[in-house]
Image 1 (cartoon, rainbow, N blue to C red):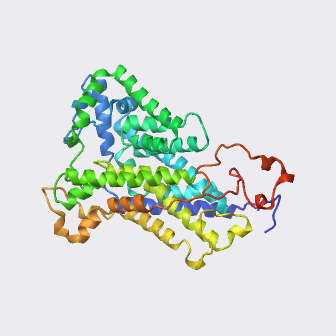
Image 2 (cartoon, rainbow, N blue to C red; image 1 turned 180 degrees about the vertical axis):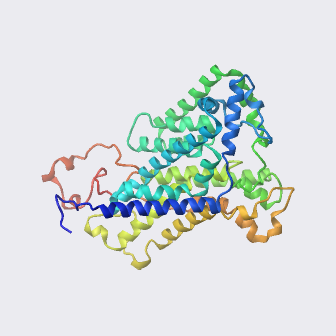
Image 3 (cartoon, one colour; image 1 turned 180 degrees about the horizontal axis):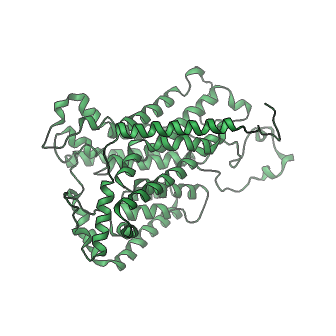
Length: 460
């Protein structure tokens, strides 16, 4: 095909073929959601909507109980303030608005995640996102968040926006983590990570944001704030029993292993300390190696594991984990094919690679297995809740299948590979241009073979 102006002319059939591919993938994702999902019916959104409507009509926010349930509002009062606008809509309209915003947040995250990879491989970024969006929307954490009317995808977007700001040197980096912490507490682990990695300004911004909006909320709704921080926060039974199948945290795993409604406290705390130490130290090391994406992913996964309750719709951090595994596989494959010799350096990989055909295979396999696990959701065929039934009736396989998400998270915390020398996630980092880059005559032979950090061809 002739090349005009350095680009191939587009043809209508190419565009139609791409639209067809995206349509097929979207259909498969929709069928997967129907086949492996559950009747969500915006259950959680109905509770949130009912609580804020009750509140605007003069009721006490934390005294609301949804009809035909024992469930009420469990988020901090700042979250209630952010949900107040939904009282102007019906529960169904508020639910669909949440779906639209959730998919938009997921699209922006994927656009940032896949951008460096697409650029390195010569793919269309928009094409990659168009294919990836329905694929990732079909995964358990996303389909449950959107189906139930949860806010996890939006909080995920806030934290990832902070990562973009951090890597580009923007002053407001940390605001997203602070807001997410004020809404749902568990993102506070990212503030600890920022402190451990000595990113002082971002940690201060996140802390100031979380504390600031919490104090302002107390000034606006003092009664609700006093009730939440003094009473509701400590009533863990309002959320649910630890042994429930959708709880895929370490506490849920231990509770099901011991056939009790709550995890043994001493054992749980002991394991939490070990996992916390492993996850945070690995995240700090990934940061020091320049792989901020893996660092943030490890922190998010660690937060899921150590939280007393991590419902399956909380586990959105498997998305960047899958992308990181896929990227590592492709980087290793490119290195084995001699891409580095042609100008696409793949730092952080040891040479020579003895079996080029198998290079990256284990990372491809890990990414594929992780995707299928969270697509097929093997936890639900073995669902139980004590004292109604014991999981031991299903044998060892049933026990492992029911806790397979939790096991996968723990393995990722311990084994998710970092990518030394990777291009900063989401774009070039804001760093001064080196002197040799502005003085071509002074470049050495070695420098001519290197790419600056902000080169469009720098590796992911």
